[in-house]
Image (cartoon, rainbow, N blue to C red; front, side):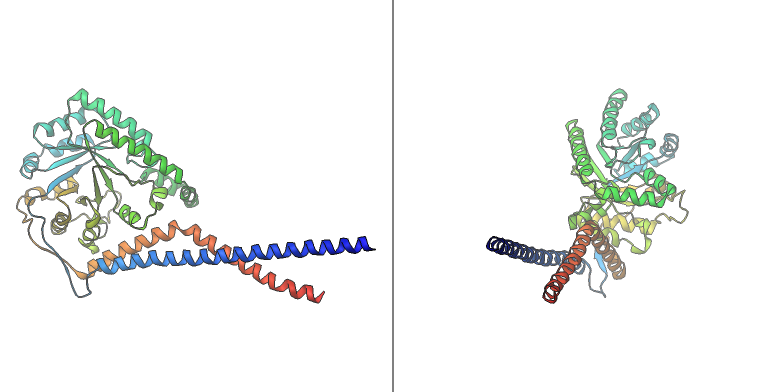
Length: 412
């Protein structure tokens, strides 16, 4: 009987000590969770508050328009040239096109989806005319054309082929441009196949941090290789990359494959033709974050008849606003400028003229940018919010069960 009594006491003590240990651990975990939750909510609100404060700082008072002075003199204009070689040959053969480019002391960024003798002949024509030419490095269409996280290896091979082709044809280049954009064909194929396929692909890419890291390392090495051959490197980026930088996320890089790369000069493609209502306010919103600015588009879209190119008033105003922030301005594209007669009119532009942007357009552009930043930040932290919700629910359930247990034991 004593042995049995002693054994019962020992088991009760062990059970009591075990319960005390579990309870202590539970209280510690609950305390840690509460602190973590408070810290995360506070930091989240701080980031959102910073974005809101930035919006109030960037946005002028409701009754005031935004007035910007010119940049002081003719900017360095670089006209993008893309399309079939035969089409570009006809474009450059038109009367006054070459002479207008010379009078404007402007350059040309020529895309290179193919490295042929006919394409080389175009470059030599521009070289002979004294017009600086930027090599707009592009891939064949079957490889995605644009440079992104999916084709770093192909881009390196392309530059090696470009070097051999340039040497064989005696071509001279002012810079090398890397157009960082999503693989449009890939996303088009996904949309045509199935929306669920697109969603599943984006869901997988949401977690592909290592893929983006590897691509950035590869492209950074490529940029150093290009610079080692004596070229300055430009990167053409969507302006949203500046928003992603502002909120310190990598969501766009993971989902769309665009990469935040360091080069000699980054050009933000602030095309107001995508939303004419924003006016030049879109350029003024992103201008302070830009090393160089590209404006456009001066040409319509064959696939989208609703896409309206910029008219002269819009185009000239965009150029003046861009000149306020950057002396180097890219123009997309030369074909549209020639078609609408913009080249000759650019020679008479007063680059010191003040430009007025309506207050409503500025407010809309600022709201647009703030909205983009919020979406990027929330999307990047979505899993944390889900984890917090699930953990909170688990703690509530555990607390509820913990309160019910003593009552059930007392009843027994």
